[in-house]
Length: 368
Image (cartoon, rainbow, N blue to C red; front, side, top):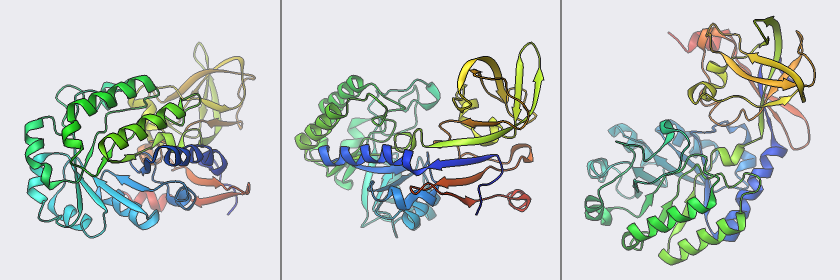
């Protein structure tokens, strides 16, 4: 298929491989396995490539777990904040590991999931996040078991534990200190388990991250407690690999120049609104000309960013919005009935392949 008309998400496999090679290096040097976090990125048209570097997938729902099992293969880890009984029964038929969020759910479903490798999420009370909304150990958090006494009582029922306590953590000293804290607080229990997941949110593929120290720390922790460590990279696996390609539809002025593109933040890059972030622009080149790049929805605050470019934008110009992979395609929606961006991949051989386009019929069928 030819390159689609804008807007479309463009995944670049060569840029993706840069992250995947670092993930493979971590496994080779530390022994830690990496599972793709499907809650961040579920675009399975590139799973054949990612499968060569990663050990499987981790999920937050039955549908994600099934998608990982069917399209990625290898290990399938299932987790949910709360399971209905029919989902546990379904997961028990194919998931390699089922992780419960609470002691009560573990006790409720231990027989339904009998024969499956079971785990429990633990809330250590410490975390790293720049956003309270995404802080796993925020006040009154419902994520994971807090009480160590109840945890000790059910320890014979589980073979592993998940400590998901990070969100975009590129601070290795902080991570190292937190691992030491977890070892000190839960060390006796950890020695009775087979595996531990450190969750996602560790930005070890970011440029300048001390990868050698990171690998040594993981290996040391693994050997000390005789545990298989799992990492669950989401953003770390796909960062800087994807752009949202748009076209300028209009340029208006209200004390500053505002270029309106054929995409929108709310349906196409929702996290920008949720976390009040500004998009980064991959193209055009930066410069001295200030412009606000805005979306075409009716939402007054539908703004991608205010930036400075080399030249003024005009109708018909292409604007490429960077870092459009993580928490974008998994959250896209039909707000305002705007056309859904197509999904295209620039393969390793340089050819661009359109893997999915959306139509009015998709919009109509998504409703009732």
